[in-house]
Length: 103
Image 1 (cartoon, rainbow, N blue to C red):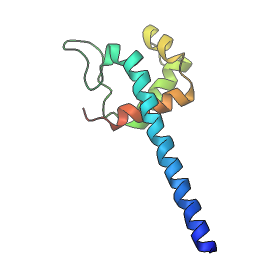
Image 2: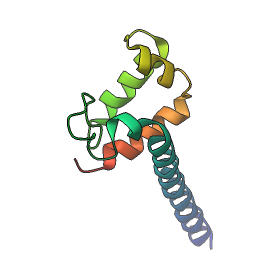
Image 3: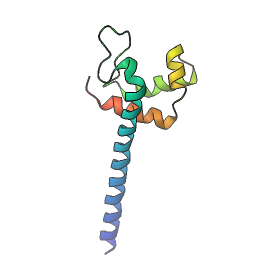
Image 4: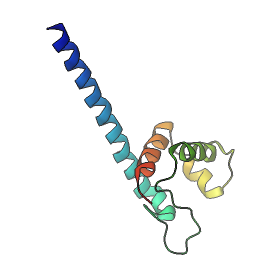
């Protein structure tokens, strides 16, 4: 009986972890669609736009870049303003979303 209870708790814990991960992707999509996509697009920027695509980028790179823009250690008037409003959780969500997309 103890083994059954322990395995049930483990399965429930894994389900919650997967659900939380999926939720972060959905939250990241919402932020990306309302903020990032206007310049960077979802999978690619508009033709001829000077902005780099974010889809499929390395998650660590994206996270570091967004935190640097937010903390103004990486300078861009536009990105400093946009990233300045993002919490760590928002950044994690946006990164989870863009990193999983195919370019």
